[in-house]
Image (cartoon, rainbow, N blue to C red; front, side, top):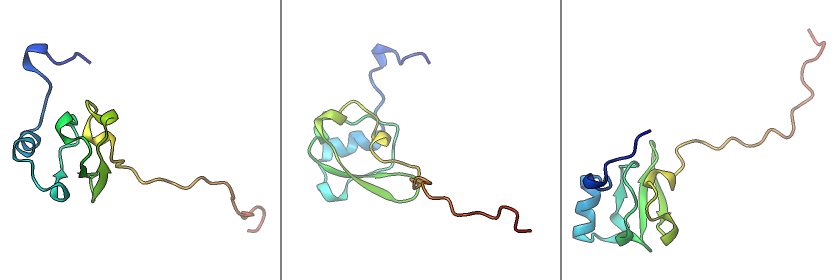
Amino acid sequence: APRRSIWKGSFVDAFSSKMRSKRENLSSRKIRSRRSPILPESVDCFVQIYNGKTPARCKITEGKVGHKSGESASARKRKPPRTYIGPGRKGKR
């Protein structure tokens, strides 16, 4: 995929830029835009990132800066590993 032009700058959702300028209360930060990058201003904050069903609580660390916010909140259900499979119905018809 082609990269975004340098002169345009990185994509930031309008809501994220408003949140950055306001410095809202930390507990009420809900991010619905999973495509916008995590900005350095929000380091050491707890945010709630929408995963498609409910907001998932995440702490933003320095390592997450520059990554997309959707990478922090998994949108898929975890399936338990199928280690034990029962005796089955072999030959019981």
